[in-house]
Length: 149
Ligand code: THU
Image (cartoon, rainbow, N blue to C red; front, top):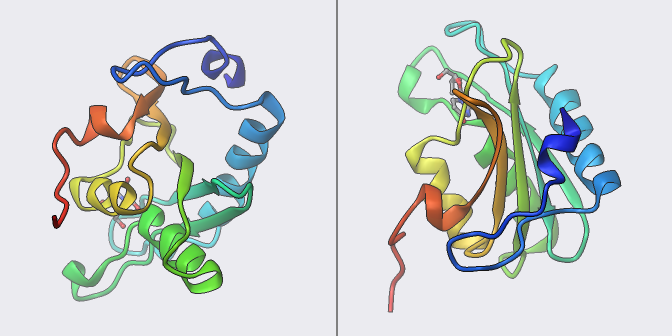
């Protein structure tokens, strides 16, 4: 599965979207480990995410649900908020990996795409799509993301 991501491809912005295979594998391992800590008693859908910062650090997160369903935090945002808490708001995302315990397609939700864009306007996202493992630039997932300026 990992090799699927190694094929050289260019984003719409013609920027390379590959990672060294060891880094990619580490990112997936971190996401998988975090997934095991998910609090998902309502959906029974466990998600793990890991982000790679531009400084080479990895932060992982899982989904944390709440009985008041709207309070749920997705795995991606858990990982990003953890990175900001540790590194501060200047932290930048190079890559995000998302996995789930059902092995079904799961791309970041709209809210998470906007949060990824805030800290990673040039980030690449690895996730399972309907056609298998997929890699996409954040601007493919979120064209014209919101910015204040
Ligand atoms: N979820 C994530 O954590 N990340 C995604 O990319 C999609 C959805 C979570 C939210 C909720 O806890 C569960 O999956 C079902 O929607």
